[in-house]
Amino acid sequence: MTLTRILVVDDDDVDRLACRRALTRGGSLPIEFLEADTGARALELCATQRFDCLLLDFRLPDMDGIELMEQLLARPADMLVPVVMLTGADDVSVAVEAMRRGASDYLVKDVQGRYQALIPAVVQRVMRDHEMRRQKSRAEQALHAIISSASDAIVSADGEGRITLFNPSAEAVFGCESVAAIGLPIERFFTPLSGRVGGRRADGQHLELEVSLSHAKVHGQTMLTAIVREVTQRVQAELALSRYREELSSLTRKLMAQEKVTTRRIAQSLHDRLGQTLAALRLSFDAVQSGDQQAPPAMQQRHAERVGALIDQAVREVRQVLMDLRPPLLDEHGLAAALDNELRSRARAHEDVELLLEATDDCMQHRWPADVEYAGFMIAREALANALQHAGASTVRVRLGGSEQRLELEVLDDGRGIEEHELPSRPGHLGMVGMRERALAIGAHFSVARGDAAGTVVGLHWRPR
Ligand SMILES: Nc1ncnc2c1ncn2[C@@H]1O[C@H](COP(=O)(O)OP(=O)(O)O)[C@@H](O)[C@H]1O
Ligand SMILES: [Mg+2]
Image (tube, rainbow, N blue to C red):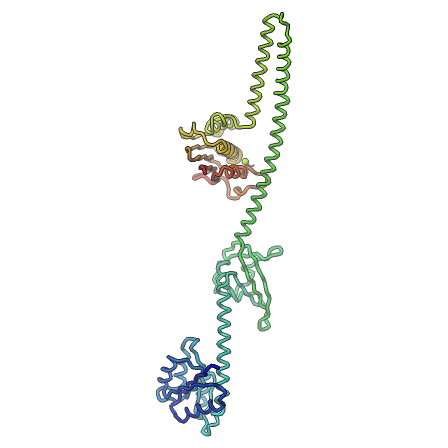
């Protein structure tokens, strides 16, 4: 059992002894007594030692008991000690004042010394009350620490829906200090959405939240508490991911449809043109083979010329099919030449727009890997088509730069400029998605931004990995 330490502060030796006797009489508690006959001595002892209870006589030679008690009660909470004030029979009003100033209890010293019998019970009760108060305050401190350090935002509201608690995480999530939030209606920060609860920051910004709500009755009042986790970034990332998936599958559907069209066109070209040419070639060749050796040389010459013409035509038709499949000039002469050719052919349909190719001399001849050149060409072609179709530009520049180690391609227009909301692609508009995916496929960086002064800049920056 722990030792109970009691300090008796009284300048009267007889009274001190009486207190000591009264407390040890029952003998139930192991008690250690210390005594002080002046206020100064009592303060000295309290400064260096811990006590469980003070029995304090009001009349001391150097100060009165209330003065001493006030000095003791001004100390930090963990050093507080319960005080039982002992007053004379003629000082009863002092007892009332002592209680008002923080004494735990009082006893009136009567001349017959009957008060001594009450000492043990009073001391035990004040010590028990003090301990309970201490435990309660510790529990409150622990609860406060938990709420303050919780990484989730915690917001409580009373029965009228007014905020009563707003922890530091709630301050961070909702962008509002607790002093400002307390007393506000809870709807100020929470908005009902279909089937769930959304959030609103103090600056009006929408928040995606995961909320767990609880109702509790405290002192007969309903208290609503929301434990909140902000998931705006996660929800936005999920949305972006699902939009990206949708874009990719639309792009795949478009590519598959294009593949079908291309295959049909090639089959048709091969059948209708090359097939017909080869059949005619066969006939002419057979005519030459089985021809009358006696036929005049002029006629033999005509047959041979016809065969030659048909072979030339077949070669042209094969070329045409290949040109339909690959951008003209790209494979043979490189990116700069293919872009130049593309700009010239576009210029014919857009005489009111100035189309310029700005390429460094090195670039005109330079060759990059075939897949990089192809992606670069297709991206420039789409960006050019967009500038002509959407920008209302008067000039469109295609800038080509770079070296062995890099490719820099930009398409700049001076048109109306692309709006922020147009950047995430809209259903059915897959040009941007296609450019982005082509860049991704060759490990290049792709960007679309507003131009310095006006218009739009589409950029492709590639380096070998
Ligand atoms: N150079 C540009 N200037 C202004 N707006 C543009 C430009 N390029 C694209 N846009 C806008 O971005 C949208 C998306 O472009 P894109 O994905 O290529 O689809 P599409 O060309 O089929 O509409 C266009 O519909 C247009 O509103
Ligand atoms: Mg487009």
